[in-house]
Amino acid sequence: MAKYIAQIIVLGAQVVGRAFARALKQELAASQEAAKRAGGGQQGARRAAANASTGLTLEEAMQILNIEKLDPEKIKYNYEHLFSVNDKAKGGSFYLQSKIVRAKERIDTELKQNQPKQDDSKSKDAS
Image (cartoon, rainbow, N blue to C red; front, top):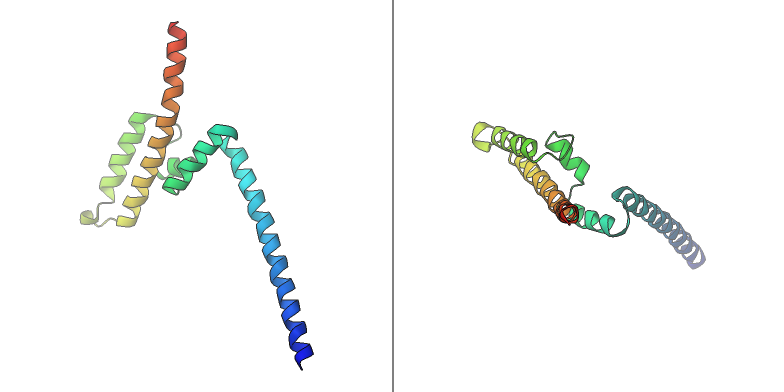
C-alpha cells in the first residue's frame, strides 16, 4: 500500500513540476514579447514601469479615452467628458470613472516622458 502512495506522490510531483516549467516558459516568452513591443532598452524599461504603476498599457489607455494619437487638447476634452458622464450622481459608475482616471494618468506619464526628448531636439535646433 505504501508503495502505491509513494508512486502517486512521485507522479503528482512530476505533473506539477512539468506544469510549473511550462508556465514559467510561457511567462518568459510573454515578457520578452512585451519588451519588444515596448521598444526595448531604456525606453522599454520606462514603459514597463509606467504600465506597472498604472496597471494599463498606453494602448489600453488610448482606447479608454477614445483617442488615436497623443493630442493634449483631445485627451483633456475626452477625459473631462467621460469623467462627467460617468459621475455617480448622474447614475454613472465609480469603476468606470476610476478607469478613466488611470487612463489619463498613464497617458500623462507617456507625455511627460516624451516631453524632454522634444525639448532636447528644440535646443539642438537652436544651436
